[in-house]
Amino acid sequence: MPASEALARARADAADLAAQPARMEVRELNAHFGVVHAVKDVSMPIPEKRVTAVIGPSGCGKSTFLRTLNRMHETVPTARISGTVLLDGQDIYAPAVDPVSVRRHVGMVFQRPTAFPTKSVRGNVAAGLGVLRSVGERVDVDERVEEALRRAALWDEVKDRLDVSALELSGGQQQRLCIARALAMNPGVLLLDEPTASLDPLSTEKVEDLVRQLREDITVVMVTHNMEQAARVSDQTGFFLHGELVELSPTSQLFTRPGDTRTEAYITGRFG
Amino acid sequence: MRSVASRTSFRRRFVNGLMLGLTYVAAGVATLPLLFVLVYLLAKGVSAVNWSYFTSLPRPPGMGGGGAANAIVGTLVIVAGASVMGVPIGIGAGIYLAERKGAPLAVFVRFLADVLNGLPSIVMGIFAWELVVVPMGHFSALAGALALGAMMIPTVTRTTEEMVRVVPSTLREAALALGYTRWRTSLRIVLPTALAGIVTGVLVALARVAGETAPLLFTAFGNDFWSLSLNQPMNALPLQIFNYAISPYDDWHAQAFAGALVLIALVLIISLLARAATGRGFARASE
Ligand SMILES: Nc1ncnc2c1ncn2[C@@H]1O[C@H](COP(=O)(O)OP(=O)(O)OP(=O)(O)O)[C@@H](O)[C@H]1O
Ligand SMILES: [Mg+2]
Image 1: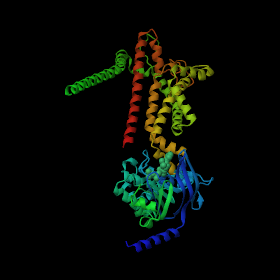
Image 2: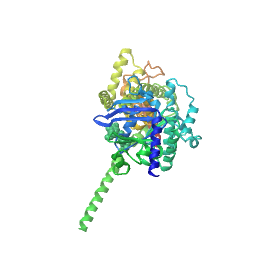
Image 3: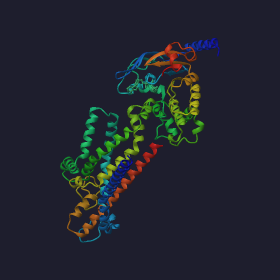
Image 4: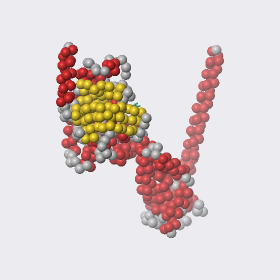
């Protein structure tokens, strides 16, 4: 791609991101584990119905950052946090906000598949629905299960095996099952922490397709170690180093004309 | 050089063989007591294990016949009562210990559970006697069940703790991330995942208390008649064995052996069930 074209594309992407309302907005966020300062003064808008990728070397605080977005960080006993995280304009760390309700709106999928071993395929997808019902929401379980499995591109593979143990699925299927489980809650935002790290290339491709699909109706934040993956699926990319957000740019720009020498060093493979 | 090498290697092989041989002998000797007990019991007791042993009440010595139906049923009732008391408390305490590993109260409770585990069973009997028999003014199955239930608590607690702890923390996180509260996560996700192991622990505890005699001597006491009331003295296999074995009558001696056989069979069945439960758990975990 000629330089001028790349420039034009980056400009267009930047304009598109700026035009998008912020579904979430992080302001001066700090996260600690005891004395470890894992996330330092991070501010970042997370535009609606776009994919935000988070990259950076191991231990730079990507997972910790992600876990502050649905208040999972505080489940670690030594964890501390300060700063603001807005979800639809409301601070999720405000005293009146229940972390459990935040997690219902901001779904999360982990690096390794975490299918519940005692539950069936159906039981896994429906696992969170009881929570919704306990707060008075009316849900048709079968309908939700099918819809979530379809959105996770898993329906055709498991529709005849809904009652077998989730552990009978392959690793890649289990990971998509976990995505379906999160989607069944109808979250507005989905957090993915290296969702393809333990998957084979074919399953990885399926998950990437899926992320592109999800972008149609929800907001996605995805941590990844794989820069090609970030380039393939994301709209904006944040580069973390030692807990700091070094750069946040449209993906098309960050990988072609990084704004910071440290980003450049990282994406050209000089460290990390 | 070469001869030195071959000499040390000969020595090593010799010592190796000798030690291996000794471990075989030790393994053999370890199984001998059980074998002796089984052979002895079979020889002495098998003649008295008959239909009437399972269906009839005890009869006075010399009349012949008679059985220990009430003791068999009594053992089942008392052990069931003990489980009703001991299992929920043990499982609850075990979950608490696993979820709050380092809390001062957890450390204290864990220590108490270990002490309780090592407590002589007769002390547990005295405890139940003080607590139930003295205030009620008479022996009762309830007191026996309480003594045995208390004995089950530490085993169930510690196995539950172990089993809950080996549930991967990633599952717990996944549940929390779905909007589960802490207790809902424990009850709906962690507990079912640990269930096979916990069932094993419960069965091991059951097998252990089913044969306890001392705590029953001054609680359930024994009874020559039918009684299903928890409020009344109740017969149990270990009591029947004890009472018949110290009697001077030959036909009662034979019935004591029969009782021992039935008790061993019962414990064996429970142990096999425990193994089956564990096996299923392992198969599932390794999938
Ligand atoms: N539970 C914890 N207790 C204490 N320190 C922690 C804990 N989890 C992470 N840390 C520390 O916080 C820092 C950031 O960790 P984090 O897991 O966020 O990194 P990461 O960028 O996700 O790394 P990776 O790419 O390896 O997943 C690291 O220094 C790590 O050692
Ligand atoms: Mg990580």
